Length: 195
Image 1 (cartoon, rainbow, N blue to C red):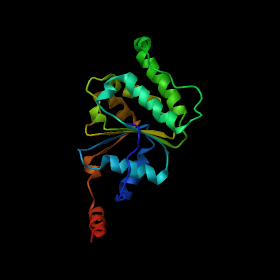
Image 2: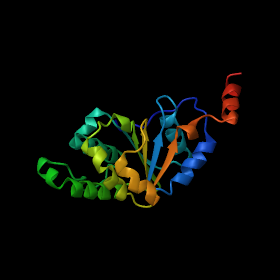
Image 3: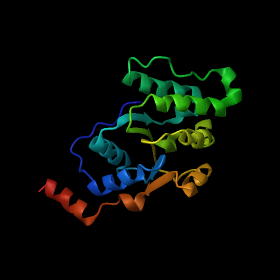
Image 4: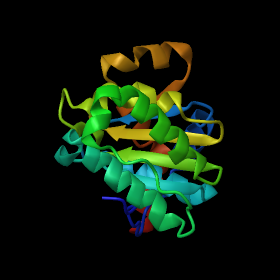
């Protein structure tokens, strides 16, 4: 749930690493492409090139329960820093009435615990059920992203409609399937590895 992927025998995609590096100026980077197109491998390989403070979160259907989402995200930060001090806020039933305020306050504190530069990755976003509160509150999350921290969402889907303001304002950058397709040079490099 909170363990980054392990890479073995992966072709470094320098061209796309440069593009991702340029996209770091955005608070949110949305990476969308079909299954098996190398999205996760690309982001994990890119992260190794500049060694950020990395929080990797594997989304699944269980994230329909916001309390579970916050629990595991808290574990991800706590496991990185044993001396984290005060615990991050817990989502308890009485806080659901002011959920937007909780989300904002939680992520202000969450992001403050990361060493910069930092990368927070939500992988397999398409697994979060449509209509789940997490999808509804994603704009609030990225609104709290401070400078030198980037939130990357990896998905088989295009961004939800509630992110249109983020895209038009320039706070979100995108990388899509046509961008991920192998160039001739990358194909040649792959062939050369196995000759």
